[in-house]
Image: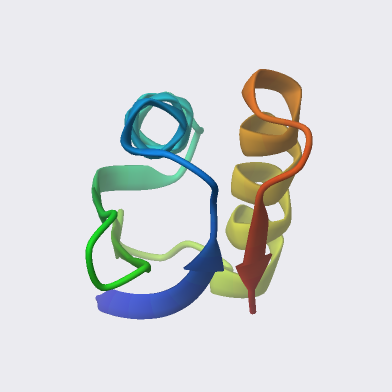
Length: 72
């Protein structure tokens, strides 16, 4: 399953850091961040609890860019 989320991030470099952090999160098959549209697309591995995975994604993104936000 693939879902798109609105994000808030200050610069393109920060968006890249968020994308990398999301990709490394357990339960995420793939993730892309578009800085121009301020959106993150996340493709989940089969059978994952999407809400739980997105909480982990948010936590991991905050570790690399503490002032970012993902609107779940």
